[in-house]
Length: 460
Image (cartoon, rainbow, N blue to C red):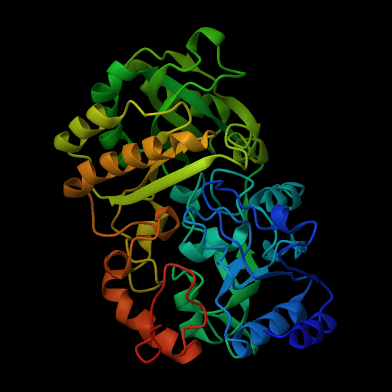
């Protein structure tokens, strides 16, 4: 890349180009997972769609390894690339809510906290994750599940359309009626097919929820998880509760005498009236006496931001995922053996993905695992870089112990860089169709810094 080419590229942009040695380079190459230490050759902070088009064309013409960054929460750091080009979408933060049609159009630099803030004013929400600082782009393209999933489906089940800059620099719209094969692939196929510059989502009436944590002592894990595996699948779809193992955080609202204590428990999100929700929670209280409970009515954005302070940017992260169809007694034994997480921030979550997602055929979107009942993540987390070997080993050992008791593949947003066999297992019967879409829209595999689906004729 010549200085002349770079100067000419800068002239085409409204945004800025950041290169090594610039005053803000170190800050701009930092992402959520502090374990990632990549040094891009240049970072383009795109301000609009035209900037994205120019960046894609420049990266392609210059033969640069190219990554795309939205919120930067990707665990293995696929929002960055060493030496190459990072197309940084974070300045693109436009949001337009249409309360009459119950739609919201969102640019890819937004976080889910930005979206919740905009839609909550109208008593509306869409399906997203569980940390509000997560970017909309990666979560959506990987599938997306969270507190509203049992009632309203996955995030991709609420995606109405997307504007996409393709590898050849053309901007297209993808929907059920236009470029429908691309739309199918975007819904779970990750960032393999282009740069999405606008997402249009369906909204639902959600203003407040009854929510919060309920913890039991760790020695109640067997009793409570046996109960949860049956109760969860039969609960009304207004009721969402993910099962967890964790250490009690050192801060409010948790009592000081419980700080650091290993627990199992539930994190609730219920869209029923308060009295009906309390009756649901009472069933959990009756199984075993809670060690701690902090549940009650709250605005939906408050629930979405509940973990933000506990998990700020700058921690070391290593996570692994599984899809789970049944929680067997043998699996429960492994949770008992590994559930005492290695550091105070490490955790295991079993997120329900039954209910509304299961009413969609596995072939209707790239997300295949419509028969899964839970999406599990095992996360080793710690602020201290010296603990990276510990959290990596702890997460891997836990994950490997559960392989015989889980489905093939995993939620792509809970995968590290695990290779093509794991990706194929995740997509199963949908993989060959994804290859064909890749062949059509990105035949040279320009977009390959991701959980990559290789085109048949353009493998790198």
